[in-house]
Image (cartoon, rainbow, N blue to C red; front, side, top):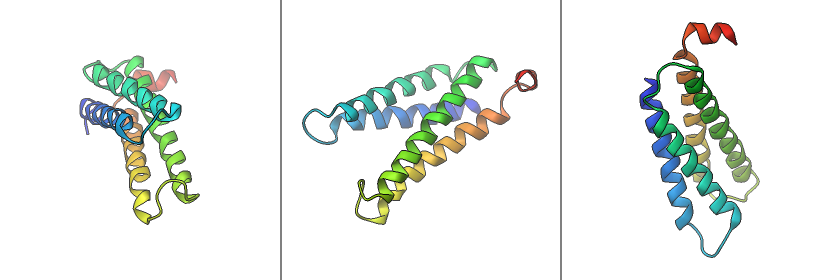
Length: 121
């Protein structure tokens, strides 16, 4: 997968999750709205960085995408495992999807950085 496609896919996923967070549940829940703003912010970052040339900035964007997606995946897996998310096994679907997005950011970011940048790190 090309970096542009991965950033577009990741940006769209984060934007959809961010918008969906505003319409899930009722009343004011700070964590739900905070997560929505977090997702919208990262979604805009990924969409805006998709045309960036190979640089340390783009490498940093891929690292941020990996860390955020992997962290959300781990928290969602724990929530499902502890019984706080869904009562059925279908609750493992969203954490697995987050894990796939994290793996995409990791592998696309790893294999599409310039050799010069890899050598400096």
